[in-house]
Image (cartoon, rainbow, N blue to C red; front, side, top):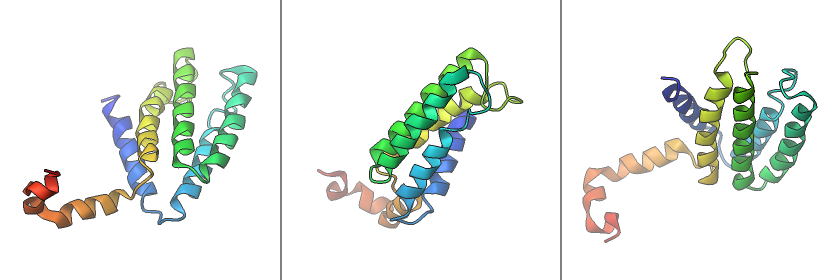
Length: 144
């Protein structure tokens, strides 16, 4: 369950974020990834090194204003920080021992969605459902 729940949280996050209409979805995600860079500030687990991630994430978020790839890179950078904190024993949430571990599982789910261009989950589902099973089983639908 410690792996399934963070994956589900990542899928819920992606679904909620995909409700934001384009052209606003990418800039909002850039702001969110910048904020994620500051998630560990105040925890002090890595000392002065804690100030490195927010600086790097601000740059990545700035580039993310124009690029889904940079937003995905930001989530993977945050994943690396999560792993460092988990291994060191200074979790994201002091009252939840495995919170950094969970975040390290959740963040790549969001990153993969970003690398796919941040599409609307509901638009994708709607397109899949409106085609119906008969359309999906035809040779043209299969690309044959």
